[in-house]
Length: 138
Image (tube, one colour):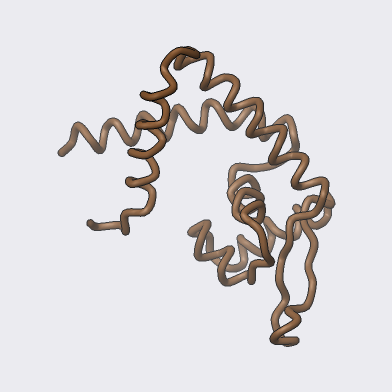
């Protein structure tokens, strides 16, 4: 079991190593990146959803969103269904950042994995997706 845990730790460090220089160059923290990626899936998200998804305390999630709004990468709107709620949306500048970062990181990963292993890359993506949807503790 420790083999899997060690592998996941190495993978986490590799992801951070690949993402950090690219997101930093865009002026986005790791937490900010997680929020942008969540918002890129579409629809407005409540602060509670953002905090839960990013595993950030609510005040920290609010500060992260404040910085994204200030940088014009996200914006807030009142929920049309429940006017008491505010939803956060991805702005055009945020979408452009997500696209640039994804393109650059995927190019680097593609070069590292080699271009001729499309079946293995698809299998790896499937395995990582299966791990990502597993609830903690299972």
